[in-house]
Length: 535
Ligand SMILES: Cc1cc2nc3c(=O)[nH]c(=O)nc-3n(C[C@H](O)[C@H](O)[C@H](O)COP(=O)(O)OP(=O)(O)OC[C@H]3O[C@@H](n4cnc5c(N)ncnc54)[C@H](O)[C@@H]3O)c2cc1C
Image 1 (cartoon, helix red, strand yellow):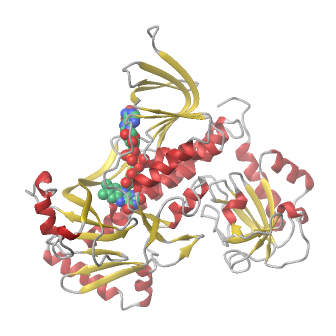
Image 2 (cartoon, protein in one colour):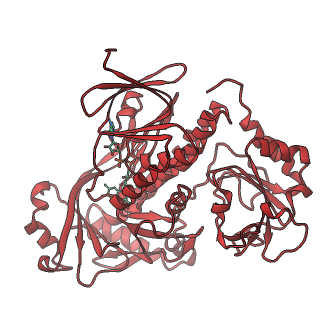
Image 3 (cartoon, helix red, strand yellow):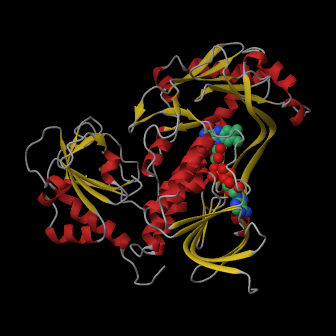
């Protein structure tokens, strides 16, 4: 190392400040983790990319501190699939609220990224280094040594306890870790066109599944409409972005004179996942870990799921509240679900872009026929086809017969009224960033010994009694009491006398009759047991 080289120490180093890196840094900031994030670009990427977010993504953004209305969204009531032969052969109902958020919205990615970056300023322990490029990574016994190049071309060496690659599809972190990116790259190019002030805009999302030119088309905030045109072999990327080519493509919808073309880009889509999402002290999140064709609108959403899963685990380990082995559950929990999402996107892709006319007739005809049966119709139309974010393996205790909330699944969100404010609020706001023991109906002290409650609190766990609206019996102190205002919990989902333990990322760790909860608390505490060695 030369005299002029800089050396820095931090708990977590994040490479890449795209939306996923920015989301992770916000979560680490909320947990008070000393973090450095390095980003090679100096400006936010403005080419058209993600446009749709689902209720899960919006809930994770809520967890990061993004409040309703802080970035512009347009709720999408339905998604239609059109065939030139059958007309609308399939539809998905996306009107409605799940866990406190609209099922599907469109948004403007650069606006969200700017908001997430702006929010980082409130965390003095998170340092943002723009114009810094990753050079190399070396895992060591006590941490990771990472060399970066600063904007002046100088080398900066960072010693971190954990490294996160949020550096996108061409992730250098992934390459340095020697993790293969398995899957396939599709043959077709796609032209994305974002236009403003389009006369007669649509208010939903439609997929024109014409094998001659498949074209998704949707509304977005800011008086925008987006089209995605599949290009044919031999159609030149540059020429297809010319005003003349776009004029022809948009002719069925509008005249170029009436609209403003805001931005265009040509992409080739991929369906790939890293062989593992972690190696040693290094982790991959977002496109660095998995990429999916955009037909399910789930690429960024999957990245946000990574962040919610990894953020609190890193915080618990670096702050000495949990052993390093807790981090093993990140790959275990996230990789199978990311794979299921890629599979879903590929299936939807086969509807949107059948490779020839005969396949289109068959596949679209079959989908139309399946709408006749109520079960198959609901499977698609009510989005049951989308895999639940429920883990098969990982950090939870699932017991036979206890399936009200399901350990390993996501804890619902509903409207509640905490006794200490008397203001209706979304329930995640009550849970905050910690572990929670919730007993439904009865006060926790009715079923858990004072010693166990004290140990739970000492480990950072919270204790709540969630009661039915206007319930007046067996009440815990006001600071622990929450009234459920809708049917998301009591008694539709859980009966009175039930209990559950919820992780900071809203995954149900365990559930059961309140009488058994002491044993389940012990199981949770076992996961916090550190070996006394700083990880
Ligand atoms: C056409 C299209 C439509 C899409 N639609 C949707 C949708 O509707 N819904 C959805 O959820 N997803 C969608 N996606 C996917 C979504 O855009 C991506 O999943 C998301 O942007 C990935 O975010 P990221 O932060 O993981 O990666 P990126 O946004 O790629 O960010 C990675 C960052 O790392 C930086 N970086 C890279 N290498 C280095 C290095 N060596 N040193 C320092 N910094 C580095 C880069 O400059 C970049 O800023 C779509 C994608 C496309 C292309």
